[in-house]
Image (cartoon, rainbow over all chains, first blue to last red; front, side, top):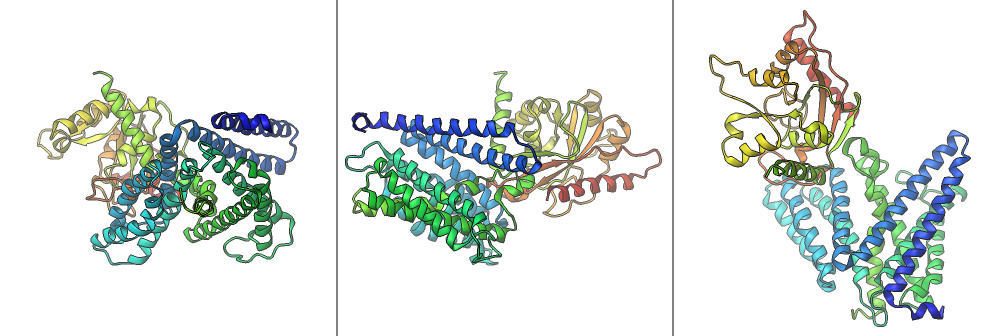
Length: 324
Length: 208
């Protein structure tokens, strides 16, 4: 471990990516080997699903790496594009009407770029209040100026919500890359990796347990598979993993565990909320309407992050007495 | 500056993809380099751009839109874009005594080009397309060897409603159907046009 600590921050980050892609390559190789001896149609179906997941993980890892090597500006730009695509997908399914046109223009072409510009320039104080305070006023004003009172609250709530999840929530991810800690400069990538690993752990543990545990769905009509026990165990496992990973964070083991627990629990709850939203919009997965709209199911992949990132970001800042 | 029209075309197709996703669904068989008349519902100025962006790049050059001469040659920019980038076929909206308004279209088909038509004539409100105008019938009867491909454009009216200048990013798709049989020997014009319209409307169900 001593040798590791002597490395510079960028060397450590480089090592992190070598490890990450090494593990991914290993998993992919195993998956290819397994697919060679697939027999029944059920195996094939499961194999296809697993390959889809694996492709998504590769894409995520590549994105993460691209965000890192392209520096603060590149990372912000990259997540800005991601945010744009997620919001586009969200709005497509929300059945907005003619009189929402101006509000949507504001959301896509003013709010989104401004929010990411605030991140890139590390204006973290304004960044956290820009959308909840200023835009939550500006948006209904623009909408009211369009002069259509019909279902005013409903229409505005949809757009406001879309902005909160797809822009505000997701913009906290590059913000993590840019946070500066004493004695921890240039290691934002570890923080982001920490977040992604614990959120993904909670997700996969929850998915895995759901099949095995006797389940009592709490909200059958929203998600048959969501149970409190699986959710709690998923978050606890993620917390434990977070505690083990404390070495790559600026925290001690205890706080690392608590932060991981908090972030992963909010991530999986966020996924549950998105499930409710999808039911309301009449789709099973965002990607399901692909036949119509060409949606790629990006929202499905980033939903957990959209909810976990802001919670994690703010608790990290509290932990350091908000002095960043 | 010979590269300019091509570059502008790529830029426009890229923008269409960024804003609408520009997904093409080929339900009636894959895109092919054969002579075709695509006919689709018409809801927005973006309809043509969307179909064009969905087509494979090598088919774009030989697939031409139809542009109203008075509007699209009114200033230099419009004229340049329709002429150089899209290679549009100009038609006169004012009908003169001695000229067949379909003549430029027939000329293009004789040269072997493919066409994209919006047989409703004007942009409809959201919902089902209006009755088709007869141009499609006359061309189909005159060129029975040209494949008639129906297409359904979904969601575009939300991207840019009538009267708005800037598009909002919303995912759209174009669904292409199987070729429509050309008008039979004794088939009435209105029967054929209704058949064509139904072929377009039927794709809505396929898309959903």
